[in-house]
Image (tube, rainbow, N blue to C red):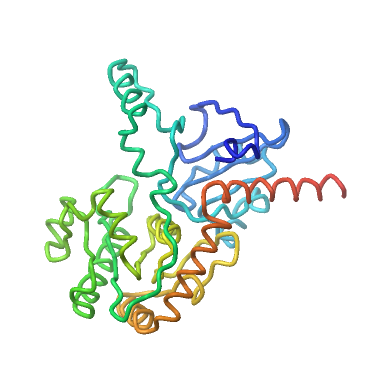
Length: 324
């Protein structure tokens, strides 16, 4: 986006030498090495990341916690990157197939030319909306998933606690709001076996239907992700200018994004319901929050603004270093 706006020149190279797939290395002005870390928390191998961190002056981390940073000798070079969600644009190199099967690759390119690839559902404009005044009977949305049984790296006790809390929120919100509430788990096998009363119809969670549902809702609920990460849906809700009830955030983001202004925070299912009731019963607060999130998105979260903010931080800090 910044290249299309002629704000930056850009050259992209694929590399398989990084310590994990969620890390990107950037060279600014041919001399300043910058790392972008999209991991769900502090789950990297310190030894592997250390080598990259030592050769960079700036390390932008999606999951940013100043206290946690103090554990690492490169902690003073870590900066907050911001909220994230799965968003892309046409001709994104990371969407292009790399498998050896020529037929599969050709099929992808044909679909891309025709504008029918799945990635089109994740283009920037698909998420965006403007603030709408709240109604006296606001629509409330909480779609989520289970994590138990999804991989050896996950702690089964932590994922069960996470899933149980989400299920409790679903049940209590349904009881409190009835037809005004749409929410539940996507239909994964673990959810079917353990939370059969909390499932959503698969059609609701299809990409097209989901974003339509987000835009037609007034209040959207977000919970903590893996390794205490800020939930991906939180970024989607901000992009859509929604009023938000969110589990307390463990990781900081740039800009003035804070409780009461951009979201109401909760720590358990009872508080989730209480905060949702508070927001649903106050149309002025609801609308003000939508406007605040619209402003935050336009200035800090939209992909071009998020990256530009980090680049300006690099140039500002580098200028201070050079002048000292």
